[in-house]
Image (cartoon, rainbow, N blue to C red; front, side, top):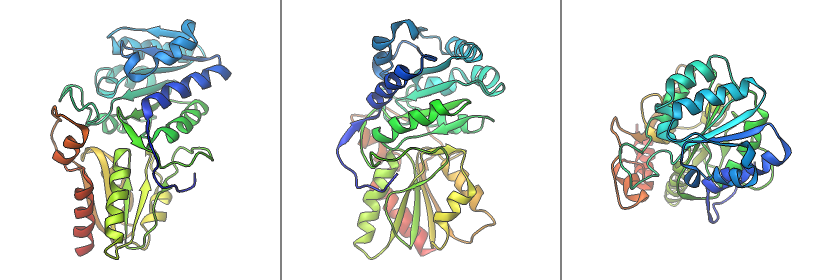
Amino acid sequence: MEKQTATKLMSLRKAYGEALVELGKSNANIVALEADLGKSTMSTLFKDAFPERYFEMGIAEQNMASVSAGLALSGKIPFYSTFAVFAAGRAYDQIRCSIAIPKANVKICGSSCGLSDFGDGKTHQSVEDANILRAIPNMTVLNPVDAVETAKMMKAIVAYNGPVYIRINRNDLPVFTAPDGEYQIGKLYPVTEGGDAVIFATGIMVSKSVEAAEKLKAEGIGVQVVNVSTLKPLFKEEVLKYAAGKKAVITAEEAVKTGGLGSGIAALLFGEINVSFAQVAIDDVFGTSAHSYEELLVEYGLSTAHVYDAVKKALKK
């Protein structure tokens, strides 16, 4: 994918639902399962198009994961959707034992991820979902930056044989992904250029990092922002390609620090290059209710200003 300046805001949830429908038109093995949240996750679009291939499981995520595993073993390609906090937490044992261990071809959509469900508080905000699933062997974990990448990612998910978790933001986000080209699992995508520091950012934090890079550029500091939309697997050669020659490496993610993108990048860099390192992420805390998404991003240290400060401090070390 070519680098592109952010354009209009678009819905990742709608892109997920529409892509699922388009893929379903050409692949009759694709089925969808939902846990009573179809209007929110937008899987209801698949229901409208293919009612006979859509299964409403009710508020029973563990059962939905197990049924999905059974459908995969029978040759279907099940996509099951629910809020990210329930997808990763409530059905963990079923994901581990019935999906990941046998490498069942199940696709999990964790919608309203991170703090993006700003009004519903701790119980519905998933600050640890991707971190949990990154720890499970055989699991691929994806976190698209925008709606265009979401649609491309869906094609790659269907082509990939094995369990995949895709993390979908609840809010409309700016588009950075060019419409041409195909998405490749494991590839990192540069968004800006700069020789002083690199920010490995994912999801909403890509736009915050780009804004910070623009402010730093005005001060004569060159920062390269790299979109890390594959949280697992992280390939060392991809990370080193962008970290090489930089004075500082910063990671930015909408998740708790333990076991997340920052931990993964740091592990790959350790012993390879001597560079200043900083992590922009959520401390060891849960979310809370707020009037807006932006209010939470500021409160939990995920604003443009926080990324800017992290780069400045890292370059001073």
